[in-house]
Length: 409
Image (tube, one colour):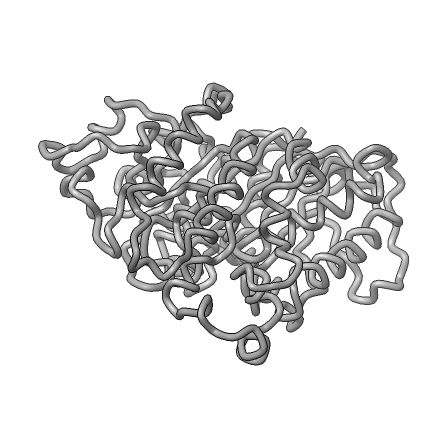
């Protein structure tokens, strides 16, 4: 697969038809954060399209934000925009498909990037939006960190000193309220709506950086109480992925003990059990996915979506949202949760509700991951920590890759 030259000023003529951008998050690097995902994507595309991969696909891990992720969402996104322009100007094709996979802050960068692409009319003259995937991305900002650390009561001059611009942006402490605008204003929502698919992967627990609510664009986490799985999941202890397609029979199949199953406020949930996934041959030798080129033959061609028992491969999950019901649900949740001791003010609650409503005007495919290893879910979802040895991360990365490759042409 074609690699981008280290010198951005060196013109390297390209002919790819689909540009896939991998965007790392806060304090990340393209090598440290995106190595596993890039490798698996490349291998899957080679298996699926054989010799056509070299000419048709460019998997590019963004590098312009290396060591520069603390100066705000706007500046980071503008650097990515310039990097993308360099990729496009050396491409002979007049029509290029664009897909984005962003981890954590990388998903926010991706959303601002497509705003810039829209602003400069690149979607009209050059780019065709395909997949927009986010992994543990704080779409609603990080108001839960205000709860934890009490920054809503800190004077602005002191928070300016204590926090980087990026953190201020995410906590909605910036003067522009950029995150609020990105969730509520059409100039940010229209570019996102252009994409054929908008896919969200979230962590239900053990993510200390990004809560489930903000990454899944949900008003509350109905599945976990702190770090503990609620009764509705019975004896479930294995890693799994949940998605928004509810099938009660499949749900019961993968729960260890469903006698105490309670009705969830999120009625559209399926479970994919990692133990069942481990038994298939599609994860390579001993169920593990190798991350080095010398072992790439262990990835077998049977790694298609049908190997994931509960993953719906049709388009039924792209159903229209009932906004009236949605708004009523949000209001009832806010009424139930707001009290005099809540560190988040009613104003912030209302702002969060508007952000929630704004983004949910769009249709999303949602997948929620449960990792068993405490405290590292935020990097496990991207396979950053010991990714050669982590079966849980490998399973999730495989799920992401198989899901992504449903729609690349």
